[in-house]
Image (cartoon, rainbow over all chains, first blue to last red; front, side):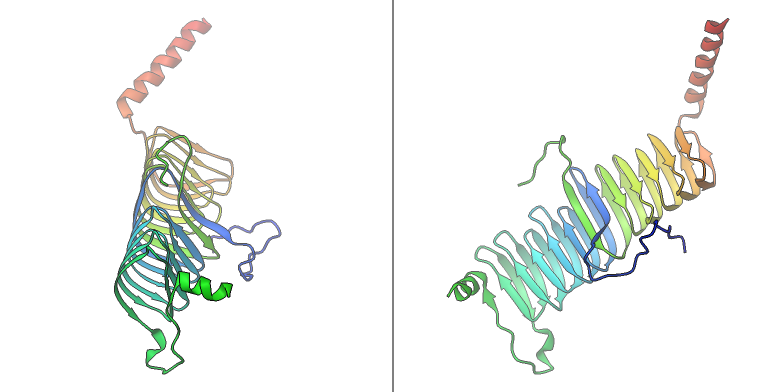
Length: 146
Length: 134
């Protein structure tokens, strides 16, 4: 393997205690198109297209524009997203989020002001599991504050 | 929310975790730091840094490049290219300024970007220096 042996710190995948920065893009604008395979998390504030597999959390920031088919665990969408999203964990569309497409998840939260146009399908629909509740974020907060 | 001032660099994309692999066409106005596997085509308007754990197999057009990791492909750099002690490069580099540190590995061709103009300038500089020294 072409990996360098870092002095002493043999990289053993520990439970995300030390999240390493694997890639960072700085500047005014960036456009990325292609296939992304990410074991943990990604935060996007630019234009990204193609196909994405995320093993942790996908965060689309307020200036992020994503046109991609995504398979992830969790997703937080504060920017624009278009495509098919499959999330085994939670999906949250915040007040600034704009989503067009299909979402397959057991847990979807859309904040007041958030925009969603498309279909939602539950993953465990066929398995006949207990239906997961769909919250409006404000309602959930109210429920939690009681 | 979007700060357009070029003074402070804005983080546009961050990938964290243990492993990541990406392939495609990336157009980046400023700079890119890679510590994972990247393939395809990269167009960078500033500096490309391939970290020690970075493995890049791509056609690259950039201004500056610093290679601490592994790079394979054809690179055109209008600025400077530096291969550090841990850098491993296979391919062709077109640049006016290439630095390879002791221990750094480079297998391929280097082409000077401004072949005729650059050479003539270098010659005139050295002849001037000789003239001064006499």
